Image 1 (cartoon, helix red, strand yellow):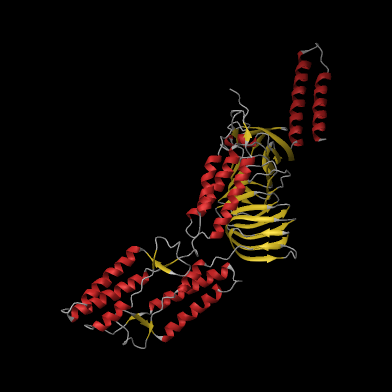
Image 2: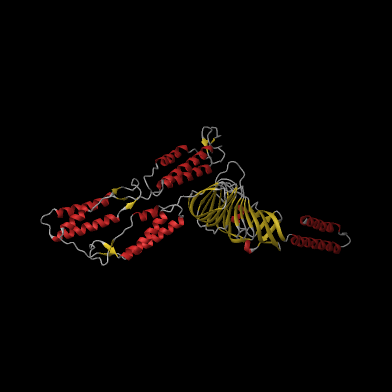
Length: 553
């Protein structure tokens, strides 16, 4: 109605000019007519500017250094918004829909902005806000857009037109980030990269969302028909409220997960989840296994020393403590073993037990003292010491050594054997002096001490077989086909199959994750099994993504 009123007003002004009396009687009357016409035009422009003031919805058609052209005409830009309406943002802003506040022919505020121009996987469309403010919502409606350095007062919404990737870097968001659902049978993973932002609540309504962040995410709400989500970040709170089955993937630390609704909820990912609350009565929740490897290693063989009142009966090569000091350390060992044996212990309880044990061990070792007994020139002592030597398994990396069984390197065993041989030579030497015997005892005691301190314990249980996973990884190289740079196979021979770059990126990511498990010396057999399953699934989707080329020579 306002536009119609403006048109009517301008038409009236023009009509007034046309019907104004004009005769050849005098030059004065002609000059009066011209002045009257100019007055009418100026009045019309002023009234038009007044009509275009206030909140307006428009489409941006071009951006210059000091103005913006829109579907409602050209406007000046306030100084506060110039970081947004700059030439480097032209590609992102052209064809964008916006709701703005106009005052005196100048845009003073943006209350909503919808970005619609897509980039490519090689070159994203960049929208750099220059730390300016958008006093409302921002909607992303196209792929491969990178949003930088802007303050969004309300919500950031990613629509179902975003199917490949989006990057959000150094952006402040007042309310939520929402990923709208994608209604299609074949859904590919949408990669979301968050950098240097303190995220508000993230609302996930879309299946196959891959979120990575370099800062902890405060809250993630998984809703509706979402069946899978991958998070490569720490999360303070996650709420799962889905209609059916759901699987969580990725890694990081999650403080709390609340399951409000769902059927089969798979939380057995690489995440460390401290607390799980299940409100859905019929939901079957699969929890991640609590990692007790380090705790079990610590309590397997606590480094006790002798107990004495004054150390008079303890050899000068050995250490001792009082009974009270030993009891204090024993208490920490008992507490740690209680947590290790508790099948319901949380990961947080395990971590606390590790910390308390290490603190108690440090205190225990700080009060240890060397004994005062000196066995100089006594071959009986030397004989007993030689006979007390016990060797443990020699291994290169401990993979084949049973759980909780000590082992050493061959070089460490060789060092002790050399000292034992020297001690035996002294023992069998008829002419050995008391000083020779004393030195042999001291050297052997020190060698035994060093050897025991070199004990290592396997952290992976029994031998972990990674052969099948390695074979599967190597097989992927033979499955690769060319990537169509055109994206439609017109550059690939009809005798060859091809995939999109996104399909290739997806299988490459799966191979990267599998290689991480192979190279991880702490990976368990279950980790290997899961990696094989994930890579097999990725290979299947990669194979189904292959198409026949259409280029004919």
